[in-house]
Structure formats: structure tokens, C-alpha cells
Length: 297
Image (cartoon, rainbow, N blue to C red; front, side, top):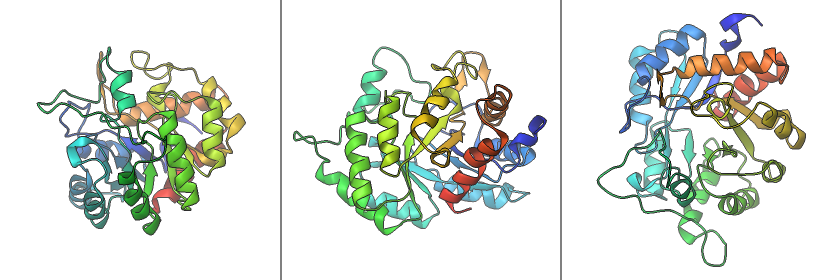
């Protein structure tokens, strides 16, 4: 595996390309151009405020030259009415493949970033109402259940856990397993969520996948990142390799200016291979085969 050939066939399930209410390092047309040049099979566009299905569909239709898929998604934050099943249904009809639970509206996220800025968010005129989706008894609130019912009846959709707390994700994963949802992805469990390796092992034992995002790691973006590559080895001690997904989570503007999600993922995969954290076959599985199968592309 030499040079940028490592990116051939990649499916990045976590890309923050613009436009958005916050300045991004590139827009989705630019992301597609770079992805096609690198040989990507596809990527998912995520925005914390607005569903990305319309822009994804139009950009793929008019700008894709080599068949790279541009896949839309939505995040259940205040800006779309939180647990808004009508919005999920409309987005699904337009091609959305991923639904994230609350991120910038999550109480866990707001508490975590109370004293430090979050590069993926912007203060709007309407203040965020913190979302905590467990009731006083520690169970899922009633308004969450229709979302899970919808996901259960649309098994080709992926439910990602967002920026909620460990307690919330515990109950969400348990209920999803009870309802036989087969496409549940834990969103960067270390960053913001604060999950332990043991938490990750428990969620995987219930059938969840784990999104391991490049920008979490200090070797990739030292100005943003938090953890060493050894975390991946720890995850592999509690999770089968088939349950891990490698993504960029790229698109944020850094202190040093724009950094492409494609360049972030290239550095991530290359260093994982060079440092013998993962084999070539494991990288192919986690960055290409597993996300492609989840997305049905």
C-alpha cells in the first residue's frame, strides 16, 4: 500500500463540508472533487444545523464525474425540531442515509463546551435548549420512541448516537437492540461523550458499530486532538474489527487555516499502517468495506 493509493475505495461516513452556519475548510463541491481525485467510493455530509440531503443530491448529480457517491444526512438538533419524525421521513425520501441523535443541542455537548469553544458550532440568535433524552426514571423519554420506531421500519437507515452522555447512549443502544436495529453507530465515543473502553465494549456487544474519527488523535491535528493511537488498540481489545469504522470527521477550520478531510484521512490511514496499529486488510475493512455495507453503496 503506497502513497495515496491507500484512499482508493474509501467511504468516509463523517464529513463536515460546507456550506454551514459556521465556516468550513471547504464546500461539498470541493470535497467531491478531492474525493474523486483520491478514488473515494463515497462520503456522508453532516451538518449540525440543516439536513444535507438537497445539496448532496444536487452536487452528486451535476458534479460527480467518476461515480463517487455524495450522501446526505440529518442531525436531530434544535434547529430541526429535535425528535422530528416528519423531518426524518422527508429526508429519507430524498436519500438521507444517516440520522444522528443530538450533537450541538445535547446537554452533554453544551456542558463539555461551556468553557471552551467548539469549532463546529456557531452562536445563533436563538439560544440552544439543552437536550437530555432520559426522563427522571432514567429511561428514554416518550418523544425518542417514534424515532426508533421509524428507524426500525427503515432498516437501510443508520442511527448514529451523536454527542449524548454515556447514560443516554446506554439506554438508546439497549432499546435499539431490543427493537433489532442493526445499523447503530457510536459517534466518536471518547470525544465529547467521554465513554470508557468498557462502555464501548458494552455497546458493541449489543450490536453497535464504533465511528473512530481521525481528528480525535493528537498525531493528526495536534491543535484539536486529544488521544494517542493506542486508543484504537484498546477498542480492538473489546470490539471485533468488523465493528470499527475509520472516518475523518474533517471540515473544521483549524488555527492554522483550512485542512481537507481527504488529507486528514490520508494522514490517519497512512500513520495507522506505518506505525503498525492496523494492517492493510484492517484498514480496507474499516475505511472501505464496512462503511460501504452500512450505507448500501
